[in-house]
Each structure stands twice: as C-alpha cells, then as structure tokens.
Image (cartoon, rainbow, N blue to C red; front, side):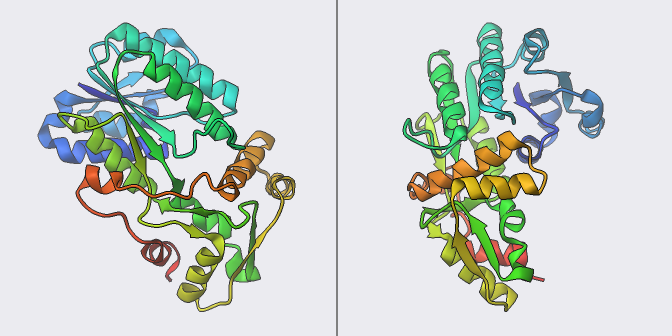
Length: 289
C-alpha cells in the first residue's frame, strides 16, 4: 500500500489525485493518506481512500498511520527550519519502525551547504537522515513553484514593477500539479533508476525575462527591480507575512541570485513521459485574461 502524508495540503492533495487517477479502481485498496485532521479529508474517505490520523509533532500517531505501508510519499512540512527538521525526523523514524520499503520525499532543488536559503538547510538535513534510514529512496528536488508567480509579481500589472531579492539569478518554474504528477509516477515505478530526481522546467530564466513574458501576455510594460534580502523581508512583513516566512522567502531568492537554481534536468520527462512546459506557456496559463 502507498500512503501520502499531508494530504490536506496543496501538494499532498494533488499527489493523491494523480495516484488515484493512475491506480483507478484499485486505489481503494492500494492508497491511503495521513492527515492531522481526518475530518478535513472526508471527501477522500467518501471515495473509499483510507484516511489515517498522522501528526508529525506526535510520533505515536505516525506509528499507527504508517503501519502496513510499503511505500511512503513524505510531503515536506511547512514552518521554521528547526520545526521542519524535527517533524521530518519523527516521520522517518516511524517509517523505519513500520518497515516502509520506499520513501518518496518532496525536497528542494537547492540543498547546497553554502546556500543562503533556510529551505536548503532543512531539506539537506532531512535528506541526510533519509540516506541513513535504509529505505529505497526517490528524493524529488523541486524547483520554484510557478503557482507563486501571481502572488510574487501580480501587483506589477497595476504598478508596472515588481521587486525581489533574486539579483540577476536564473531559475526554472513548475506548477504544483506538474510536481505532483512526477512524484506520483516515482511512487508507482516498479524500479527506480536513481535516488535523486531534479524536477525543473526546460530552461532557466532571470526575472527580467519573467517580466518580459508578463509584458507580452498582459500588453502592459512590466519591469523587474532587484532589491536586497533585508528590504524584501521587510516588504513581506509589511504585507502581513510571518517574520520567519518572510526571511525564508527572501533568502530563497538570495539563493536564486547566487546561482543555486540555474540548472535543468530531464528527470521530469523521464518520470512523466512528456516535457515540462516552457516559461511562455506557464505565464500564458497563469496570467492570460
């Protein structure tokens, strides 16, 4: 049986949907989910998918949630670095105790030791623990979420400019749905070719190119202005973003500026059977009216 953690979250739920689609009628016997609040997953239960209670802050619930599971899709949690590392530790320990044979983990493209990104440090620590777990691994190192582009630059449709601490760095973008599709494929594969899959778009772009793409779609002149990490953190906090998240997002873009996301891989196509969409297609999909 396959179990997906965090199935009430955006990425977790989309992974479940792709697994259910691929499993068809056998999903009711081969697919389960773990969530903090089972009541919020009532729609999955109504479809015959087993819903289990699993709270990463309460290890005892994970021991029960992972019982009898052969393959675990471990969807990374949200929160400050130390909290995430502790939660992931609890999940990995419970998976090991339950005898889980394969763990598919939703990681981060940048796990470099010299990265300025808090996210990199959290995922690097979790990956190290996974490698020591003894389970077969499929670590999905995800690039930047295209889903965040409207929130990040959508205001430029009115103001004509958006600000980020990404410098002149380059990155690629995939939607959560695309990442979920590839993750589901890795969970179902009979044999894994390797342990680490880098899920990227087909090319990298700097944010001046993103601005140009938005200009083409919107018909309005849009430009990108690089600012410091501290200035971007303060701007996010001014919009009500919690302090830890504001800093984590700002230093993620500092990692972009440092070149940590400037690479592409064929792993998305290897898992899904088709190429990832171009930036132009993504912007058209997100911003065309």
